[in-house]
Length: 321
Image (cartoon, rainbow, N blue to C red):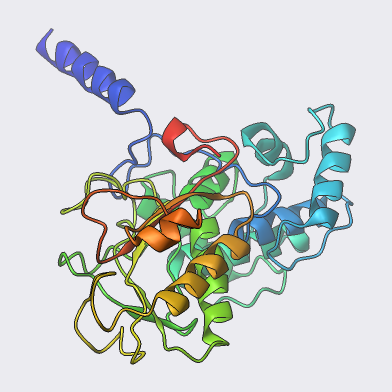
């Protein structure tokens, strides 16, 4: 039958593209994002609250540090999972409980953190599954094209943790989308939080804001002007200028007279320090920074830095650390 043949072609196409994110309202290939030591962000905070829900001692600071690794290993051992301290799909699945209106506690806090980050809400993180939380869950489920019942089960957890996050532009960023991709500011929760930390650290140098360029669209997919930026782990930035006008002045290259190598070096160092073990590469063609092992040469990267973040496990090997 024609429809069956076409269905088979669609399935084959999905298998070929592998990790390509699904379009809005249908995350057919959503997955639990692996998180491990060195990660930051809403997904880490959710993991920490879920560990608390299961009786483990973990801070809810959004930083996957030594105490969180210890708590994850203890949880994994209690559940008969491989005790490696890495939260992959199996550990996520064991951590995430079925919760519904009327429930209270750390698991609800985890849900509230995720909803605030992924849907740009301002729910109180009070651990109460209120009507407002139910409404937010229902709205997200409709947004994701899954059963909209206001109850948070495995499918909702998976789609919510997979969904991209949006940067806080108060974290010393300015918004620059040179290719006209004005809505391409979304990225994974880890990538967003790690870059926010780097921008805040750079703010202490008093050398201006960090120009935030193209990242990904809200649900990934093809992005004009880029061969990557499709899975929420690639983010572009502009280099720093000697007059600190990188957010208000013209775009420059590393060869420009107003290019500030020392400040750009500090930015690159801050990016790496904020995400230990989770920076795959930084493309930028300043030969001095390349010789210092801070950046990597790539064609067409004279006028911007391209940071690729990575995870210990990712469906696309180009994003595995």
